[in-house]
Image (cartoon, rainbow, N blue to C red; front, side):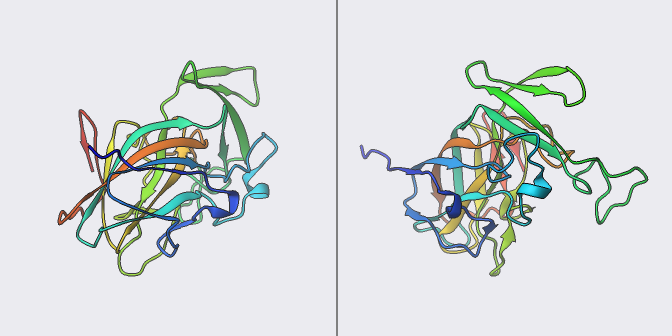
Amino acid sequence: MTEPRILTVRPEPGEFAWTFGGVPPVARIAPGTVLDLYTEDCFAGRVRSEQDLVSRVCEFPFLNPQTGPFHVEGAEPGDTLAVHFVSVEPARDWAASTTVPLFGALTSTHTTASLHEPLPEVVWMWQLDRARRTCLFSARDSDTEIELPMDPMHGTVGVAPANLEVRSALVPDAHGGNMDTPEMRAGVTCFLGVNVEGALLSLGDGHARQGEGEACGVAVECAMNTVVIVDLLKGVATPWPRLESDTHLIS
């Protein structure tokens, strides 16, 4: 029996991708390869304290850095990638959340007006206890602390889009991308339709936990050490991303 190939990738700060499509592959892999990956948080690691406001330390559109892309040998349009999430583990003992004026579902945006004032820009730092599997939230305006269960997942998983498109890592679509589903956790398989030769798989945007979507615009944002196995289903089309767990089919 042939041992599976294991490829470890730990990108340097200048080696992340910011889009799906339009980026040359960092490696070519055979179907069945085990990818042992480091992914940076959505802020590219720049939000490290309550004083690090996103508007000061981050530059739009350089958010949601992706590890990859990976060219999967033999993948052609009309095929499907099966990305098996083996493990998803926070790479640091801290994470960050923030509100950003005119961003997220809790406030007005440039396309959706509301009557209340924009939310102030505030950063919260979370302490992650990887041994106890908890996330500790500390309020900024009181002594309140809330400990929540850790449930690591990836917000972004995707391939290059069809029709020569290049899509920001901030948006979801048929290629996957910024889907932000809490179901993208260890034990789940994500099926993505192949649109270009090699598929060009990337992932990032790790969350130590997240609700059903990101109401304030972010989750508990953290860097991840993630292991996935990438399989190729020849001649099987998947027009929209699909997830399978031991108990559910999700699309």
